[in-house]
Length: 243
Image (tube, rainbow, N blue to C red; front, side, top):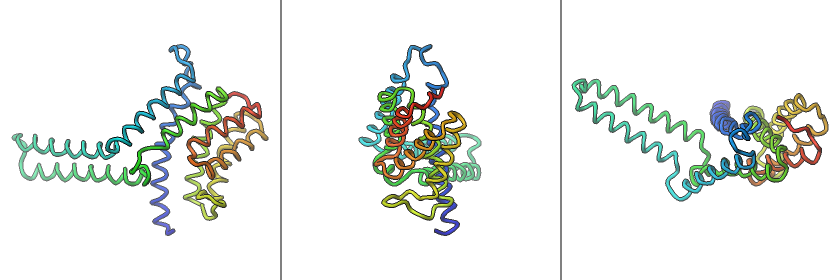
C-alpha cells in the first residue's frame, strides 16, 4: 500500500475508532455513577442499551440506512434555506450563489466523512458492530456480573489500538485472519499496560490480553467476542473488580 493510501486508511480507521470510543463511554457509566441511586441495576442498564441498539439496527435493516436519511435531510434543509433567502430582500443573485456554494461544500464534506467512516457491510445492512457490542456486554454482565468491566476495557483499548497499530505498522497477517501481528502486539501492549497498572496482576493481565487478541482475530464478530471472552477469563482467574 502506498504512503498516501495508508494515510487515508489511517484517517478512516481513526474516525471509526473515535466513534467507537465515544459510544463505549456509555458502557462505563455504571462503574462511574452509582445507578442504584436512580433505581437501576447494572444488568437493567445494559439491557436498556442492548434494546436501544436492537431497535436502531432493526430500523436500519427494514428502512433506509440512517446516514442516507440524514443526507436527504441535509439536502432538503439546503434547498429550503435557499428558497427562503430567494424571497428575502437580501437575496441577491451573488449572495444566493455564495450561500449555495457554501452549503453544497458543507453537504459534500459530510457525505465524504460518512463514506470514509462507514464500512461496506454497514452501508448494506446497518451498524452491526454497535448491536453486537451491546449484546456482548449484556451477556458478560449476566454471566459474570461486574467482571464485565474487563470486557468493556478490552473492547475500548485493545480494539482501538490494534486497529490503529495494524494500519500504521501492519505487515504480517496472523494465520487464517485479516488481523496483523503488529496490530495485535500494539493492542496487547496497550491493554496490558492499563490492566497491570490498575490491578498489579501479571499473569491475569497477560491472559486477558492474549484472549482479547484471539477473540479479535478469530471471533465471528469482535465486538461480541471480545467482551464475553475477556470477562470470562477475568472471572475465572479471580481478577479484582475494577470500580
